Length: 572
Image (cartoon, rainbow, N blue to C red; front, top):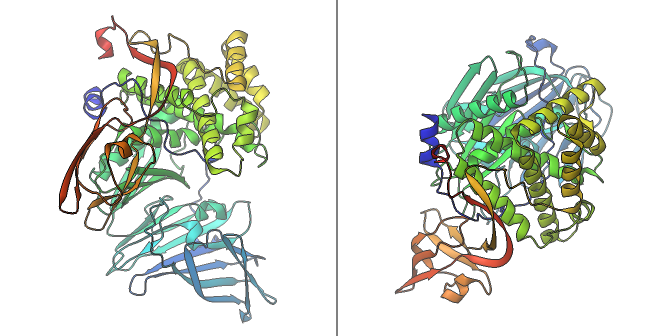
């Protein structure tokens, strides 16, 4: 059955897919185990209560400390939040509040002496804006729902150590009927955590669709708000199976008491990308266009996030120092993608053709990159460039390079090397290992020759994978590669009408006659495939315009994996 689903949901094999649309950011993942104690509420050192106020469009927050007086509370992202009604109380009553803006953060502290117990209370609402917020972490409070990420709402003490925490979510019985977060489906969660865990979680209030899975290999949950074109319960079940498969791949054993891993799924409007999937504490946030089907690309990205709990989370190669951290993108973003593809292929969710498609997209990204052939040092430097285009391209290429190298190792060598690295990290009681340790471990688990080839590929950008990588189903073929370039962007209004809002200069779309303001009647193209024409009908005033053009940008020589002439039937 699993194989049948893969054939139904995956697109047909094509030579070249689009390069990744967005450059990766640093994703530190998270430790594989977060302790959670079944202790009574009275032992909580810090209690955070979040109450939705739909009638006034705000979120009420209370942060209380039973035994300590935090010197500062920090609202990390105040760019989309308006804070009001600040009240700070100690054992002797309310004291004057002092606030200051630190970049995008709001700092809150007491302007006078405080004695425990201490409570900070305030109201926060989204800042009004003419432009719709399409970021995954959207902050919204409406008549019957609310959703946000913790950094937009929670002013929490600035501290890094784990403490006893109590989280209380208070939904409204008439409007916000249920409440959940990436931390769990319960309204009250008690455990030993860092304040950062609450700050970087996703929260949702409303009439929710939820699902929960309990198993010997860990627990999973999901909460969905709004309409999406797929069944969120099915996606939650898939996600739980992917998370378990990733743990098995890395040979991780989780305690039944380990806190559950969660999804928060929101419906939204995404004109350029159907999905946005980002990490949140103990899980992930999926923001899906209301009309978007669940795609293989979304499945790969979600599985990659589960892999990053280990590759880039419990295990980091390089340095955590901010000045050096970008060097590690090849591992956290690249090798985690390779791990996701290995897992999905072994589970039958990515077929041989689907795997070839993704590898070809990586090869195309490398061949068509303006930074092709740059050394690892050059890319790490450019990844911190003030120029947005240069910075994004360098980060994307670092991730592509790591993914291709990870795939070239093959599943068994990748797994053995990762296992050994995890053992070394455990013995050293650290989650950071130097690059030299990685190469020495790779030489020990494979061979010195493979380790040397891998290091040359990373350092110098020699990215051509082994010809046998996808054998016997596919063979490596030299080919001129073309960049997929749609050449225009659409805007969708509340009624679902799509209008052309941007046409790229000198693109095939512009040469075909497409104009800003054209309204879409019909539009058909194959995302990521530059050799299949875009066909569409557009309304321009009283006129109907029919257009057809190839979605191709620049081209360059490169390689792809194409189906082998004598591929066995098992490849189908």
